Length: 592
Image (cartoon, rainbow, N blue to C red; front, side):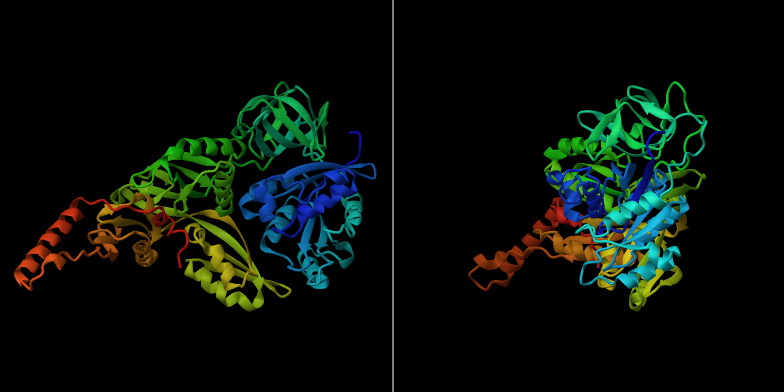
């Protein structure tokens, strides 16, 4: 190994300034010239810059006082926690950034625990100390309680103005450990901590070399996926690609491969040389599975082909995206897509609408369920419409989550009430200074629709929320179907706990009554569990006054005409087809 190296990452909650701090570091180390500098340089996606969040992580190599610094800018959102855990494995130290105006938030806490688990050296930094609303001492006390460090170890910076950023770089050099290898003598091993698909070059891997070296044109092999490829180009990112002859032990860089999709080289996999493979893969790899599913349908069926092509293109870069064709009698052809969480779903939807100019209808998100059949067989269903015949089912298991909410002490009551209302229960309550940390468990399905919005309302926006999947549990679950004029709408069916089914049935039929237009005949909207109707609303018919043409007061003639009209309406009701607008499928997304 030639030059001394320090590998580090920045962990923080959304919007605490980690991308801005990375900008200042690149400027100070001369990695990027001032004329090329723009804010959030590492956030290349238009969406990232607009929302102020990091979605794709980005590595960058800098030099400070003769030492090579490799930084990985990680996403802060809970949906991407597996990527964060892999990038933490690729480094030896972490800069913990906390906003002086907001203090410690839930995702900061979750990522700090991940960093402590990986045994990283944590360098605490308080950002935005120059703002009038900054409460530096209070934030410092929170960090000291969390990490058990001294006040002198915490650096107060302003990432925007560059105040004290050189001190942070010095601290990384002083206290950050040298790169460590897991076990020398294993052969060449590199960890993939991110991968994406480039239209012109194929799959590009971001890797950390733990042992050995990978030279240009070497034959490489992915140990978990079992795929082989060629390292067409290797190098470091500054943040532009800078090709080199090879990547050596301790370094972080990129490998351009001849692979066609990121499914052949997933995050967390181990890269080794095909001719001299390593004895064992690096620890921690897992196949990330989607937990949230939703139907995506184009408003016009002519766009189905474009939607399919767009999703295929996005899935080349995003190995967590799973999709399969879906056909609905009302919405036509579409795709059922699996996501890591609601933010992931939101980002994909926005990208489809912006980058591919698609008009979409998104059905209510649902989670996956495990169905244990009477014969002991276990099948997985992704939507309520796939539920097998109830008589053949022994039990249905749903995913539960372990969550953590950080909020001001005064608002605990509202939040506990909200958790209980979602069939959840509190498991622990602790305090960090004037903040409370509520640990709870709840069914994933109940947090899908609008839990986050309700949490923000109950706490005036002061709470932050983090969760992880905590296994499947058997519950008394039923399928609630919705019938419009006697026709079952599969796209509207939902899985619900028996105790909540009646409430959901009443609420959704009421909302459907508002969005489905009136017809010339009466339309019944019903919610049902099997053959049992649990809720009903009726959309009244348009009533045309057919007696208007009779000028005399003859009651018989009027009655005869009204009778004729009644028969006509009854006939229309038998053969008529209700036109259901797209909004009917989004009423589930926001429930009161």
